[in-house]
Image 1 (cartoon, rainbow, N blue to C red):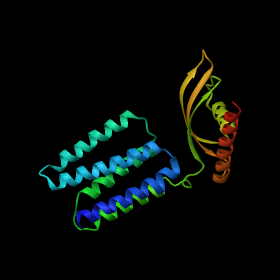
Image 2: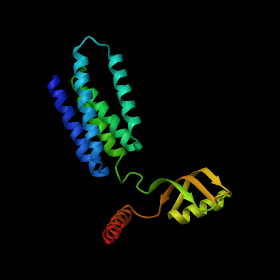
Image 3: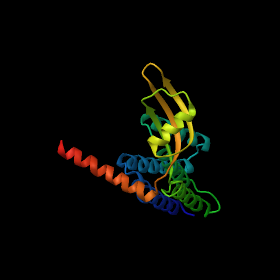
Amino acid sequence: MSQSALVAADVIAIAVLVFALYFPRYGRRDMVVAILGLNIGVLAVATTLSTAQVSAGLGLGLFGVLSIIRLRSSELEQEEVAYYFTALALGLLGGISVAPAWVSPALMSIIVLAMYIGDHPRLFATSRHQVVTLDQAIMDERVLVARLESVLGGTVTRLKVKKVDLVNDSTVVDVRFRTHATPAALNDTHVGTQAAAGAMAGRR
């Protein structure tokens, strides 16, 4: 496959990743710029390295250093880290020609498909993860589970107590739980919360 065809495949893959998957789900404009910039930058450098007398190890090391610097400059959620490195991988696949010719486009398609499935809103739709601070110091785990399920409106599947403050009477818990609400109800609640917040802002 020619280099121009690989570049075209990368452009299509990153466009689907950003504009069809990431932005509709997360809505962060700054990350759109970051993901596109990373992908095109990696594509350009990988294309140059593939035609220059430079070892692949040096090129991959350079990408690793750049990605670490970028990730340390801004806190990202795990899902956004996945999109970030997917963009990096697509850029590498688009910039380095391998044989047989169908391998790179096939791998790009597999990566984008994996992101589509793995980050689909309906996958484990009722599973949640949250760090909760309770206004009570609770030492008994059974009491703590009952309190969390009452507050969160779901079934606790796993918890880890981060801190119990007996002086200030508080408990910080990292909890995994399954909500009892359906995905449709959760969306309606989210929309209602946004509307209420907008109404309060308007009153101010």
